[in-house]
View 1: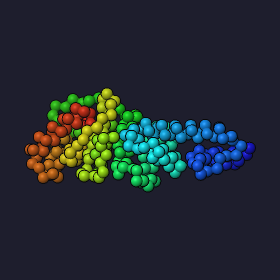
View 2: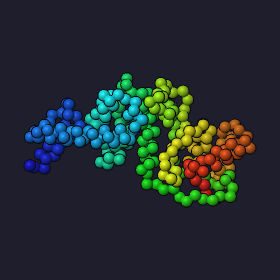
View 3: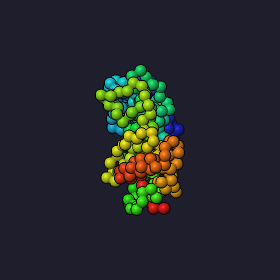
View 4: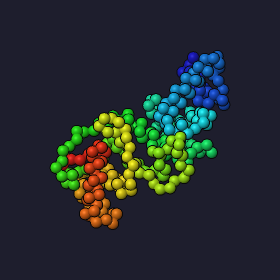
Length: 249
């Protein structure tokens, strides 16, 4: 078989395995063998997606779920050969290439993103540095942990489950999802003021905690004294949970 003929044969097989209902089967391969390949491809991909998005999966009837996975396999062109990155490809499909159906919850894409963040942090190769000892928290330089992500959603995706499916967004939900020093992925719900503080810390390199809090006081029309009391307490909690890292300046 020539190289071009081999390539054509492989592409025919690939098209068939992606969409066996509409694409012609490759010639010369018995149906029993084709079914084995078809089941292997689908079951592997579906298994990784179900395992990566267990809450999303729990919201669907079997037929609707498998229809969604079929659409992903048929329509999305993955840019990675690694199974661990299928979840990221599935998220991209939902956010870029997918048309919502009546059976899909309105928070579908946000929930999928939240579950994907948990996966990404769980498998991240980043490591937390040793915790620093500081004499004065307000004089220290705070930075966001490389294993902490600040997130904002229209829906309370961290509460979604079989017993709670919000129909519409009410107010923004702020979360920080992080991996702690025991390598457990956790989340913390934040109010708007604390979320803004974490955002300032995320973008910080040289300012002390006291300087950041003084600036935040002006943004929120609060006195510096009350902000230092409120923000100092919030900062200590974030440091204790390894969401924020501090160093002496």
